[in-house]
Image (cartoon, rainbow, N blue to C red; front, side, top):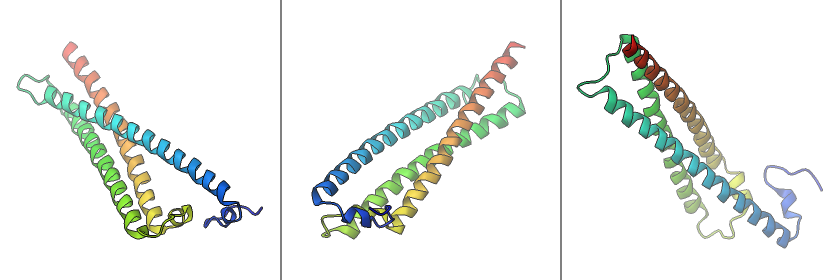
Length: 162
């Protein structure tokens, strides 16, 4: 058998039963992968929203802790990074909706939908690329924002103790 290519010609040479089993396994993997991504995204958004809510309510109240200019600057940057995380992950979810709409619109009435029609489509590849790039940037923004917020918290405690 030849090596697998982009359009999946190798899969066309196998029996329909084997091809169906392959598609079932791939579909199961995609469902599991999507569930893991959803759980991961919801977890990041929960922590981001919680960190923003708690830190803003602490530092924006009347009797908030005294902070230096550099601490305030770090606090603003951490809030910006955490807000960017929410925006980036929201755009990722919206792109997933657009992707689903695109698949339904373009392949309506063309059932059975073969795996090759999805894998080789440049628009879907571009949408997947956008999701990966935004998700990665959003995740690193989340990490950086949390680390910066933790640093601010430590500095505020040290400032209050001195």
